[in-house]
Image (cartoon, rainbow, N blue to C red; front, side, top):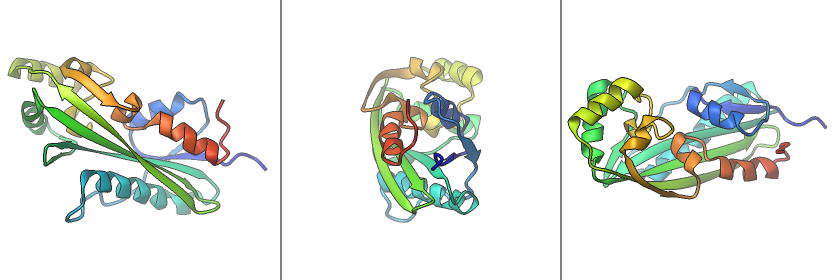
Amino acid sequence: MNPQPLILASSSVYRSELLKRLGIPFQVAVPDIDETPLHGESAQQIAWRLSREKARAVAPRHPDALIVASDQVAMLGERLLGKPLTHDAATQQLKAIRGKSVVFYTALTVLNARSDEMETGVVQNCVGFREFDDAEIESYLRKEKPYDCVGGIKSEGLGIALISKIEGDDPNALIGLPLILLVGMLKRHGAPIP
């Protein structure tokens, strides 16, 4: 039997770049889901549910594939941090997180569309941010434009300069795709991991 095609259910260029590191051919299919949090959901539950919904959303178009989907949510205390989308929103988020810690929850789902087996896990990273001033925020935003990144932080770029420490099991999770967890899931589904 031929290996199942691998589909990344994401429009994120960051996730696509991470998946390329594994050296497995894949295609991208953009899921169309409502990402609005449900009343009473925790950050971890939001990420878990959305990663599963993304996988399910693309499955009908790829019924023979292994589908990889991921979602990320960040919490500053009790405050949910999303993608800022605008310069002003990013500025406000960065002012709020300076000198504090933010917990990033990155959920990963692998759906075997052929057998309907689905596996989901969540990786947590606690990120400490150093004190930085308004001028550093403005410079960072002008250079990096991280408006499509949860919390306005692009740790694989200049965002690393705002971070004092990262605690977690997989640094790739912070970028959006926990590769350590993914390798184990793909191997369990028979994907050809080198």
